[in-house]
Image 1 (cartoon, rainbow, N blue to C red):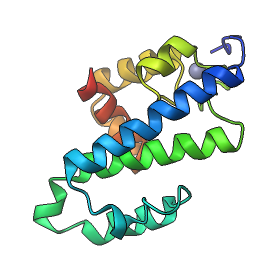
Image 2 (cartoon, protein in one colour):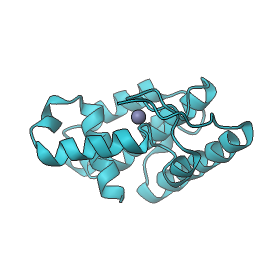
Image 3 (cartoon, protein in one colour):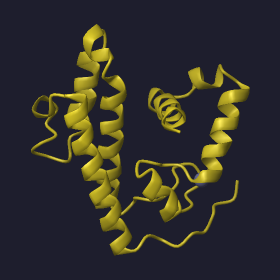
Length: 149
Ligand SMILES: [Zn+2]
């Protein structure tokens, strides 16, 4: 699939999206009652390893499994914030095209452009076993994305 050549995000757009991500993370932490301190989210943005560890620790815990969706979404937000700092935010992980600002505004954690996303959803619905062959992160990305719509 050919990359879509959208304009790179401006500094202003990036700032807007970053603010949105931070806001969403805050709301999520509050509403999910995730132990933010335990996850290291309050002091340091660069915590994806700790979040990984936390998610791993929580696996098997029935009470906290309930919160896995929130944890994974927070993880996605962390990833997006990291990408902003690394100047990689807004690029489609599949085709390296730029994701449209409007799409990011609606879903700031999106890491696929709309074409690749639709492609992935088609694949997912046409082959249920396709999900199982994909990486854990990818599977969660697809399912949480579908559920959010
Ligand atoms: Zn793409």
